[in-house]
Length: 340
Ligand code: TYM
Image (cartoon, rainbow, N blue to C red; front, side):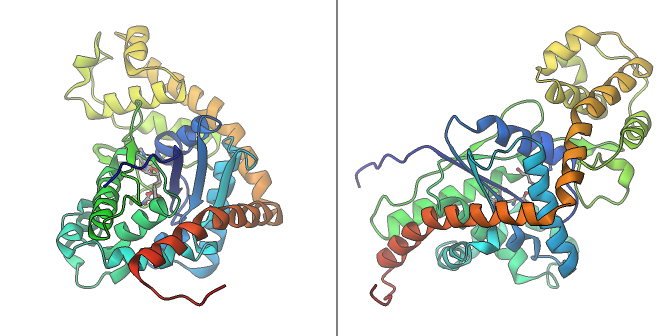
């Protein structure tokens, strides 16, 4: 097989299954915005993924707009990036089906996120939740995306995307899909729960105090950092000193990511500082960075028509990239389509 060179192209997505958290912002959105201009960038609100667990229909529509507002308020420029919601481009579901026929059940059985989400209830969860990683592969490969910025929790899914691409290319003896690279770099690849540094910060945690929401006001942000779990020790002199201190490390990483610094630089500046000093400084920094974003999100959410128009235009652009790739895929697989 000859090596095909694919144009560098970024794709990533966020599920509208709850409000955006600081984890989504630092692990994903802020980095998506930073990649604009360097390559072609395509960003999606993955509503078809959200419905793998029950979503109230009105709330799903609202959350789809809120995630779009989060992208826009954080600096995503619809003239530089394509921004759309997944269900507006039916080719995602179509390629997803083809990939259900490429991916192996054994591969799905190894997905740790499915195991975590299904827990002891695996018989009762939707079939969609199980097949989810193959739809995610379709999202990426439908655009022949070469780079996928994600947080650490999505690494296994992007690796599965490579396996699906490689198997498709091998089965059909064509170098048709790129072997996509996950882009996982910087201090914020796994922002942890503020009450338990061994768990990921997520939209669906039990208590609101565990996470910072992108829509939290200044008082809430300050209160959540003040109450964040820590240990009695001051900040260490070196990064090594954070090794067995997950809560302390998390707060240092949040500070570093918000301030565009490395964790080393934060430690150098705050070595020996106690939490009474570091926590309020971190809260002030978070408020400074997040409040303009939450204010802009609120403004955008007051005018859903503006968001809807941006998403509709983005979907049109996305379809123009996706449809020829889907058409070629159908042809390679041997699916007969009406001429014209
Ligand atoms: P989702 O919606 O759970 O999260 C969206 C993005 O935010 C990152 N993220 C975090 N990063 C650091 N620390 C955290 N605590 C944290 N929580 C979330 C996630 O890693 C992700 O990058 N399956 C995906 C959505 C998806 C997708 C795709 C992503 C569907 N199709 C194609 C990339 C490409 C998901 O559920 O992300």
